[in-house]
Length: 356
Picture 1 (cartoon, one colour):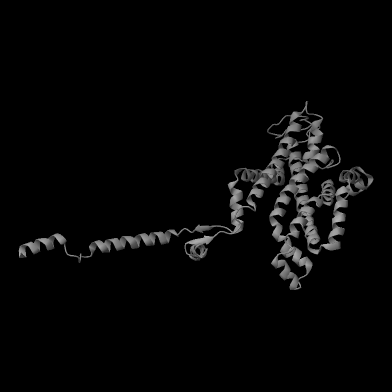
Picture 2 (picture 1 turned 90 degrees about the vertical axis):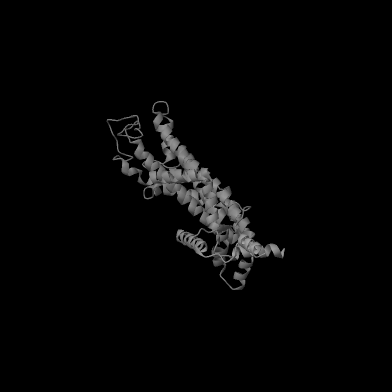
């Protein structure tokens, strides 16, 4: 046992030829080895760029009407064609992708932040605080979010709110309120396994404030789960937006989203099929890459693999390699030019025979 430890120590101590790879670098390399995950990341970046900067490639706005191109097929003037009213479908697609992305990112980020803090507080304090917070969490799960959303979108209260607040903000707020409970329960269970760690006990004995312990010691140590829940939260938020908008309680006119565009085009699938297929294709191009990225991140954060890094032999700079080659060549030339000090055995034998 001591020999194995000594061998491992020697291989690491020789710092001139070896270096230890950081854990973050290992996770990044695992993710980059997953070709499907990298492909999904590239598609997601392209969709993000399309939603943010696609409006600069057309002179039409989503609500602008071209009376000379009612229900036109895709052309050089209207890249994705127009709808029955003459609106440019490309401009509407740009706004739809941007709104769906905004909803996904806002809901995913806010929901995972709330669930992380709430779950870690439950696990840290325990006792009656944990029971009360768990009761509130389970009560929120039983509330019918669909009914609340319908009231805020189509009810009188919602119409008054939408006069000053965009519809996507109202929808995002409802999705945030009812979207953080599930991850909070999982985070609570994982944080409970960290309460007994030495660094948490040491922070308690030193008198560190409980909320600082939660934010500095518990939340960062469940970072892998938070990253996975973040990508999953974006995907679920986009799916929810499309589903709610399709049934008429999500994004409404004058705002556009992928769900509202699919809902408007579903009734004209036979007459104007391009109105339906473009939003559907972009919907899959947005949700599919998120699923591929989530699979790649899950494999990269796999706890069964090595998490301490591995030893990698460092490469010598080219200048050192060229200098060593020059030194070797000079040493060979010097050895060849030096006179031989050892006598020739054949010459010694012939001399001894002559003397005899």
